[in-house]
Length: 288
Image 1: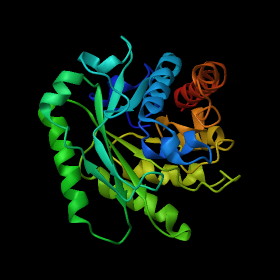
Image 2 (image 1 turned 90 degrees about the vertical axis):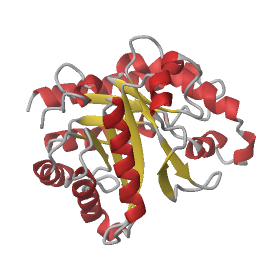
Image 3 (image 1 turned 45 degrees about the vertical axis):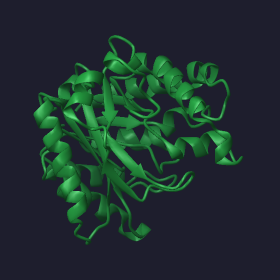
Image 4 (image 1 turned 180 degrees about the horizontal axis):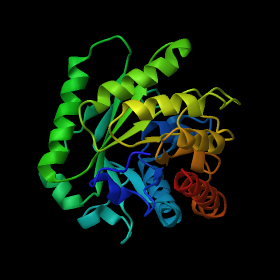
């Protein structure tokens, strides 16, 4: 594993692994919480409550948490994040219809030095969509402005690339996205798991090794699009191939997200799941 950049290391465990949990979802979370009912039945306040309770239940088992500014933060220094919890702030604006998929990631209007100074994140994160073989000057400009914001504020940057392509192109698209976006110089990269097929993780380690050899920054894997039952095995295979850990949301709390109130399920189910996965990843990284 490539050692974390000095800046990104503040999000890692002492052994250099990253065991981070994500609760920065917005309209996709509303859809999950609706559980088949009209998405309009899920209020903004319910989103905020889930996020607050998820941070409280899961942060003790994570090296860092990822939150958004619209629903995940309160006002004031550290924005309601518990003392001692390292947090990454999503500064992306996700262009999507309510209940629909993300069609573009942009830099949010509130992503300013003054806002970062007021909220005090340990790192900032940007999601961008990547379509292989299609140059995208607007995407590249967004990435450049995001990285410049991090440099000007002295805040580490975490860049997430989500591919949009035909299923047969997926592995090559993940590779192309990672190598293209990491060339811009983020401190940490968040990738989809290469080589994953539902119920089959046999190609993950090999393709992860290829990715690790070509990147100059550490990288972690996300959990969107992965069957939650497959996620622990897929993460460990990715770590065998050099991934530095995970930044996962749905794989941790997918089966309790629709509960109201969410606290009991988060504490009884999601927190032990996160603790078990984090322990396995720390052991896998230390063994390399």
